[in-house]
Structures are given as C-alpha cells and as structure tokens.
Image (cartoon, rainbow over all chains, first blue to last red; front, side, top):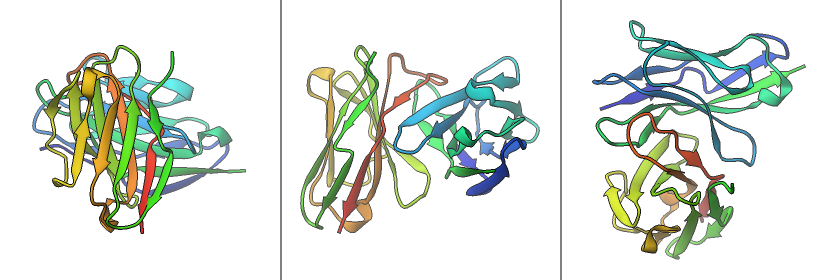
Length: 114
Length: 115
C-alpha cells in the first residue's frame, strides 16, 4: 500500500519569502511522485513530477522538489513567494504496476501575505 | 485544446435524491478517472476507465455509486440514493496513456452538497 503525509494543512509566508511545503511518502516499490496545485475555482494542475533520474525536479512557476529516498520525502520549495502562489497544494504518489491511479495527501493551503 | 470539463460545477440535493455528474475528458484520452475529496480530507481514487471498460473500480465506496462511460467518450457518475456522507468535491481526470508516472489532467471538480 502507498500513502502520503503532508505536514501542515495551512502554511503562511510573506511575499518574497521561501516557500517550503512538506511531503513524506510510504511505498513498497520505487515511487513516482507528483505535486499538484489547485488555484481557486480551478482544477488540479500538475506542478512537477519525479519518475526516475535526477532527484531535483524543476516545475512550473519557479517551484522545485527534491526526492530524498533516505528520508522518504518529496518537499516542494520556491525561493521567493508571490501573491499568485496562494493556492492549495497536493502531493501524490502513483500506483504500482500498470495502474495510473494516484494516492494523494490531505493538501496544504498556502497563504501569501504582504 | 479543451481541458477536462465537468458538469455541474455545484449541486445541492436532498438526502435520498439522485444526482448525476458528468465528465468530458480531453479528446483522444482513453483513460478517465474519478476521484473524490470529502470534507477537506485527501483526494481519493474512485475508479478508472480505459475507453468504455472499467479498469479499476476498487475505490467505489458502495453500490449507490454507478459510473458509466458509454462509447468511451464522456463519463457519468450517478449517486442513488444520495446520503449526507456523499458530500464533497468530485474530480474527473483523463490521460492519453496509462501507467505509473503518467500525468493526468484534472477538471475543476463538481461540488456536491447533500442536505
């Protein structure tokens, strides 16, 4: 079975500050990991994903995440927060075998203040 | 290219009534998924279609839920009769390919409220 834990249901940062959203996973097989973002009144949008290869993954809008197998983590970061980053962020792990289904964490709502 | 479209965006129904949610995937995407998020909890997988066939319906909560994808194009998810605990946001997603690591494209969701 696979699972994802996102620490912190709400995170608040100042504009220009570092964004760090935490994600830890549990998987019995090599994981494929995703970060999705949901802006208000929109669907989930893929930010970035890790499949194999380079452990530091760069995504859209300046976000990146690092896969750390030893820590079973896939934390999302952005050096400088912008007001437009306010949204809900979801970490997910992909299924095994041929399954495409995703197992999501509970989400982290990011607030960006002036 | 149009994205995944879901109808309606919001639905409020009384307990015991029937509701049908619709999902139009991206054209050419054989794979269609339904997910649900209840009360701010995690988004949970419901089922996966490949064309018109159910590939995996392990997440369907009970037999009050019926998903169809006739003709392998759009899909419907019917809840009959609806219960209070069915309230939540229902997401649909689609992908051209299937397999681990494949990106799925999500719709904006249908917010279902059962009162």
